[in-house]
Length: 83
Image (cartoon, rainbow, N blue to C red; front, side):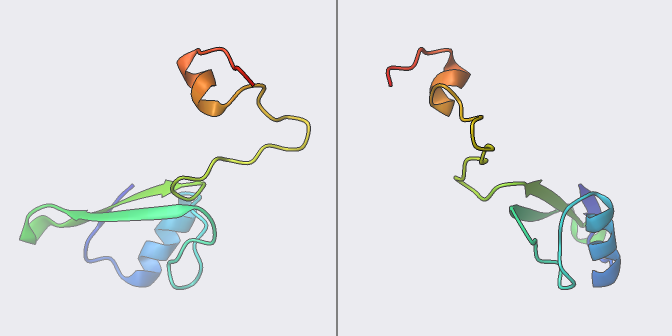
């Protein structure tokens, strides 16, 4: 999501929440990982927000009884599991 660089903190928090990103009153995520990058020229700067539901390097958890039958990497590559 792209937001103006000069937004007030309260407007930024409201926009993040409206987009479904779980942030607290300070703008910190309650879960997952929020990556923010500032881009643009000095007079036209914007903040680009990318939210990942799980932290960096984490695998999403599955409910009990719904575990994948093969490792995630093998599934995505179409490689049969050896386990």
